[in-house]
Length: 503
Ligand code: NFE
Image (cartoon, rainbow, N blue to C red):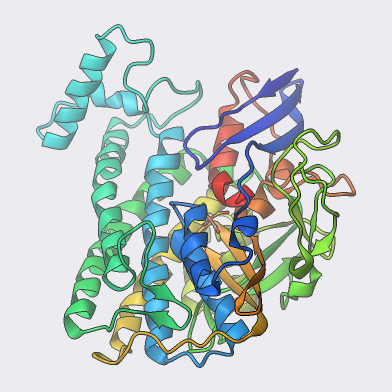
């Protein structure tokens, strides 16, 4: 039986997943990126300082990650001396964006896969938000609309949390989390400019000079976000994990893990990072070699050559290509598939014992759940890894505020050389993000982005080996092949962003 899950909702962009089911087992899965964009083409011939602005338009969820990756690439291409203030401001902006993004993903994009929102109809309390939702749902259900109470209904059939108090509590936090996300974005905006497309981020820092007032405002906002993470987000996640322990064993990807590391601890973009970079196969972590990354296109809708290194990347669309089924390319590391994202970040760091807080949190939650750390490669593992990153990043950005030199510039003078090239790597919320810039005659000659969801939602590579999400779906048992709530939970655990993936 062949079932298309697309368009899969509660994710960014246009994703179809084509599944083949036999005896309630997914025998085959194809991830299909359904559109073409071409930012790398748009950037050719432009002023290089347009790049950290234009690449933010790749996506309205992770624009800062693109601005930061572009800034790192340009810093390397220009041999820029970055100040401590400049790097700290980048970190504050990017860190706050991660916090916003984890909350958005858990509450708005994933929680309703587990939480029974129909419990609101039984709500007998006086909380004004919940009363409003209950009355709205009742009115919608009585309205005779084809799809009442969207986006909460209709929903897929399957098991949901049964404890009414947990369900209603999670729904309240769903509502509250939007206010908290706004605070995280406001914190970033203090230095970067209004979300989602911040105009103050540059190679070397920000055009904003940090004052004591700015710093105090940032700290106040992040304190509120941090409290929400510990008091609501993590307990809600633990409740989901306790109700659905089988999801520690569902959705394993079947390759390695790669992380570029997140938040440099010194002015240079290649400084040691708060969360360490590395590539993990089995239990062995090695340094990431960017020259080992290539992009295959046999199954992607491009006629350009396959298997090219990043700096040689090409993008010639071929919508009717016979073998192709996706607009997403297939990046590979030494020809091998890797998963990127929160689980990769945490596992790569954990295996190196880099960040003691990550080690402690992994051991703590693994102990509560009765799992081994390798179970982070699962639906629940990806969710838990986001929460661990959130806790670690919130503390770090608050500490980082103390290291700002107030009233000193937040950036540095930029001189664009006649020619140069540079790579910039960081961790966007969804994983390893690489930008490459080559400058000639003071203009962009070549620009390449290799983006987290391009890795995770890649189609087959030239050897026919599946991408990370495809591999995580294949072999999954589904109760109702027509609906596949299990597959949707797996897809959502990766938090795909197809706008980024096809860029
Ligand atoms: Ni459009 Fe993005 C993140 C990047 S994912 S959300 O995080 O880079 O491919």
